[in-house]
Image 1 (cartoon, helix red, strand yellow):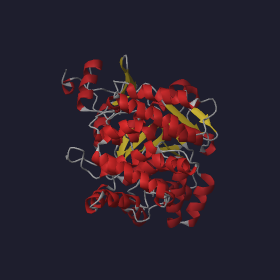
Image 2 (cartoon, rainbow, N blue to C red; image 1 turned 120 degrees about the vertical axis):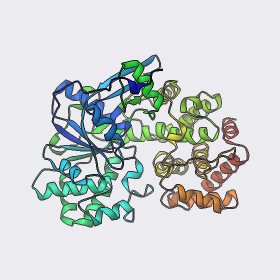
Image 3 (cartoon, rainbow, N blue to C red; image 1 turned 60 degrees about the vertical axis):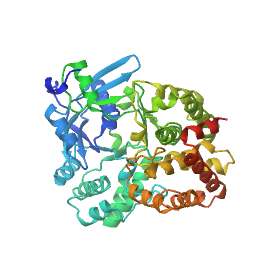
Image 4 (cartoon, helix red, strand yellow; image 1 turned 180 degrees about the vertical axis):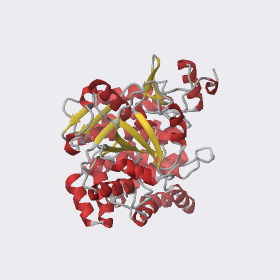
Length: 483
């Protein structure tokens, strides 16, 4: 394998840049492997000035990698038959918010910008996942209220930029989230209005009446890029790309067609589904894909399995996840028009099996305190209320509790990446019995809704599942589920 750093660096090839029409907050791998490619294809097919300026909200790493190569990058499609590289040039610049927040606000306030998109993960919404309400005590929100010129959160940048446009007599931009949250546009609108109202009632009123927050459903598996991936890509394309993205062949983007002044790229021309209401697509994806992804991540990691493809290659895990779809998840869903949910689940399983996608169970397990309510707890609530057995998803909750205790089945430390990691470990360490550990976790109001906290059947089943994970281990608990 070639040391790719010795190769000529990847460069932008097209001197004719489109003007900037989109600002994106949180320029990570997923957006560059998904929405950015759709936007580039829409411009290629139908024209329009929809160039993207990316904003890194925390670190200069992405800027430092992309800007020296003209913000061009490679999106490597990891097909089972072999990798396929795509050269992407839709990003025009990358700004680093902590270094120059004024430059970010200036860019967002430019009249040419019609859309601001964001992928900041669940924790970036500074809200309580169980209620959707703004966490006014969040350090970033405290900063955003204190300093109008240097916001810290995505919400702060959005509100301050919208206020600038309002005061300057400009039309607002559309705010479009691309994160995995149920009813994500509605959730984002809610926390934005809460924050705006703390600044100015007039601002909140203007946002409520004039700004659009279309909900979306995004789907593409994008594993983290590793150093060896960069070297492999160098061998393939003969150039050094400091910031490529890896992606599966499958992709899907469903968007509520509700934009300020109807201004958007021609996304429908390149396969984006533009709909009136995205809820059924969201529910299907969050529960069928994200819910089982998290379930497999916690149980697979505890069982010593490194990737999702490794996990479903185990016959017991394959049978387990198929039963989850058939018995627990699909019965609680209303399918979008024209969608066969069992066929959708079968296609998901084939995607999970793709040996070219090295999607780490540890990576998917990150930020579980923020993900659990949307991916698993919501459907547990409805399933238990309907009287359906939900043993597999309850086992997933117990596996999360075991995982965030930060010690694996062999006694080794787990590197838990979660905004509540310290609290979760303290709760686990302080409880001297399994029952008390479960009780401590269930008492976290920010994660668990009262309907589950007060459900004795749920509490008993989670406690039994946690006992089993401690005494028998994840693999044997999966086998017991299958019996």
